[in-house]
Each structure stands twice: as structure tokens, then as C-alpha cells.
Image 1 (cartoon, each protein chain N blue to C red):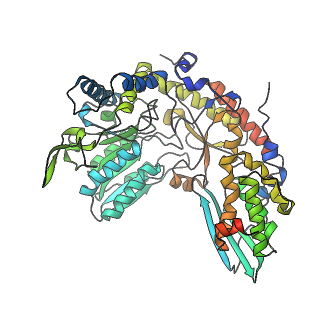
Image 2 (image 1 turned 120 degrees about the vertical axis):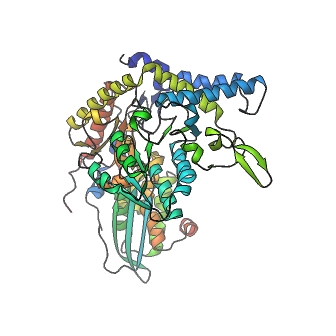
Image 3 (image 1 turned 60 degrees about the vertical axis):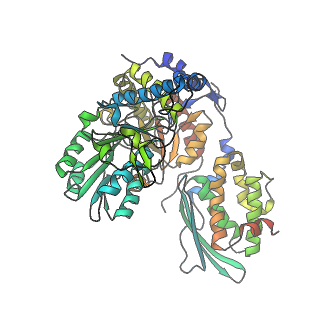
Length: 152
Length: 416
């Protein structure tokens, strides 16, 4: 019989499952300079984020959360990708990531592992899962939404 | 008489559609059920032949529409074994029925120090209205817990009900665990304490034979859309005399007797609580839903659901890596089956099974107190109704197998 053979191996790429099973930067920081938390009330995904910023550099990040593989792997990959860089670099990555999910833009090499989440764009109800940690980051770093999407 | 699903499914137009290239397998009946042709036709028939505002016209259409609307009050009463149609109020849904009680009864009867007893398995609609009432009056909320099997802890419930208790409000059937609560026993506890007993029947009225007299409750609330009827119609039944003691809920047309500049007097019976033009068309179509259920017989509906629920629980747990919450004995549970798949979050499950045309629910099911108690952020829930077949359970299992395969490609999370 014919299976549904949906593109699930593509949506749930192994790198996503790997970040879900073994989240990077899971836990908390002793003395974060920035903190925020967020939830998707409809589905119950939760992310709490600790960040330490020195000057313009994101030195340390840690997150705690619960939820689906998309929301949790996105948080893990986000911390791995932007930790060690500057806030303006983080903004740039945020913009590229949102473009990939919301506008189904071609993944940018700048995204690194985050490119793996491009399949989520085909599942509109799941896009908010992938964006949750970024919303929390924006709040933690006090990045204005408009600013984030207009600053190159 | 047993239910012939093959014949009966022909009455439900939506059940012949496809989703993602596969036949629809609709297993989200605890959220809302599908509608038979008779209900859809009743809506059209009303708008095409009888449409008029009720209770205020003398012309023929107004009389016909009023008769049709009021006729459903009697059918709704009959469906739950209530003697008097005048004890039935139409609302928008179960939530509004409960809010009506919290306002029209609660505000006048609760004081600081009084207690309201609830359970951890309540839907938010049977928690939040009481939290709001407690905030207005200074009353306190108490919650009875549940045991490892997902059944209400009756000893704890008994210990919580005392002389301060003014209201006990419990679900008849859990929308998450499927647990059927022993309402007659709880009614005795409430009666001894002189407390009012409200029963949230949103999940029971569609699936079980209900007799409010035998249950011994004071108030029973349910929704039309979970029992083949249209959305936008709820029912509130209150024991004889209770409605008359209560203050109005919403003010406006229809609910008054005489309006003078300095004040007004209220309409008699349920009309006091039905301000403004009600949802006439949907109430009338709900009558067709009640006719459909009564023709099948609620005993037959219950028997069918016991069979398919037992089949589903066995198939789910037998497929490996799946845990079913709540009682497993179908004598004490209904057809809302919550389960977890090891290592796969419910949202991921839901996305994958949807591609197989299977509709189930993932989330907290408006029962966050229960989710916390179960120590899970969310569950998967398959919920059955009179038209579901065993092959649909098989389709769910096949889709879950794919989810397990996709997530099994990398080894399970190592202990943190």
C-alpha cells in the first residue's frame, strides 16, 4: 500500500533531532546581564533565556525550556550560532532566520545549523514554535521588532 | 440496538472528504463533533421557511419560529431526564452556562470565607469563572486531587466539603482522562453540607445516558456542538425553583416583564436569562441533533464508544512506546483518550499524523491544572464518537508508527 511518505525526514532533519535530544547551552547562568522568558500559550512551549553581554559581545547564553522538537532545537541552535558574536551580528542572523521561515527565503550560509529548520516554512502552524526563542532573545536584549527587521 | 457505523457515516457529509490525499479520520470529537445532514438541513430549512424573531411577533412566521425554538427546550430537558422544560436556559456554550451561574447565583450567595470545591481535572471553563467569583467575593477555592489511575480522590473530596462549602463544581467526564466521576455519590456529599452541586456535562451529555434526577445534582451544563449540534448553543439546567431565586445575568430585551424609568421586572422562567435575540437557528438545528441521538439511543452510543475505546487503548499500548493516561477500564471512562509517545512531543505527533488525514488534539486541552498534576506540558488526545470505526484507530496507529520512525533516527536523549 502507498504510504503518506510525507517529507518528514526533511522537516525533522537529524541535526534538529540531535539538538532536541542533546540541547546545547541548556541550563542557567550564574550572573546573567539579560534575561527573558516566553511561551506559546496555545501549545504550551516555553523558553527561559539567560544572556551575558560584555560591551557589544554576547559572551554566554543558557536556556531552559519545554516543548516540541522545533521550539527546543531552534533555541539550542540559536545559542550555538550567536554566542560569542556581537549583538548586531545576532540581529542579522535573526533577520535571516525570520526570512527563511516567514518568507520561505533561500537559507543563507550565515545561518549555519539553523538552516536545517527551513522545512518548517511549509507548516505555517509550526512557524511560531521555531520563532519562540528569537522572540525571547529580542525581549532579553531589548531589540525593537521594527529595528530588528530593518537594520542590515 | 447496536450502531451500524457504515450506514450511519453516510449521514455525515464531511466524513467522505479527504485530507492530505487520505480519507479524513476525525478523532477530535471531544473538541467538537461533526454534524449529520439532518442538522445542516434544519439550519437551511429554518432560514428558508421560518426565519423570524421569536416571542414578540404575532405573525405566522414568528409563531412558527417560537414554537420550533421552545420545542427544543423540551427536547433538551428530555435528553438529560429533566422533568420541566422551563428549567432549561439556552446560552452560547458550557462556558457561558457556568459563567451565568457564577454571576447570577454566585454573586448573591457567596461571602468572604465561603468555599468553592473543584477538582484538578476541571476544564478551565469550570475553574476560571470561580476564580473570578472568588476575587469578587473573597470566597476560597479548594481542589480535590486525583489518584494514579486518573480517578477522582473521593476521600480527599469528602474531606474538603464542609460547612463553609457553598458550591461543589465538578466535571461529569474528564475531557483529558476520560474519567467518569461518580456524581450521585458526590451529590450526597454536597447535600449533607448544604452546598450546591454544579456538574459540567460538556463531555458526558454527548456520550452517556444522563438523568439529572438520578445524578442528584442542582445544575447541569453542556454544549450542543459536542453532540452533533451547531456551535453557539449551550444549555444550563437548574433544579426546579433555582432559576427563580437567581438574579438576571445579562439585561436587555426578552428578559424583562415591565420596564419603567426607575426600574424593571423580570420575565418568568428561563427567559429571564436569555436577554436579546437568542441563537434561534442553531437552537432549532440542535433539536435535529437531539432527535438523531435519541433515535439511536444513548445506551447504544455508550456501548459503541466503550468498544472502540477499549480497542484504541489496547492498540495504542500494544504498539509500543506509548502510555495512555487515565483509567483503562471502559466501565469508568469515556472515549477521550490522552496518550504520550516516548521521546516525541505532542505537537510533532500532531503534525505528522495530520499528513495521514488523522485529526487528533495536541496540547493542554484547557486543563493546565491537570497537566501540572500529570507532570506533562501537553498530551496527545484521540477522542471518539458514534461514527468512528476500528479501522480509523488502525490509521492512527500507522501514522504514529511513522512518527516513531522519524524520531527514532537518532538515539534517545541521554539522561541530563
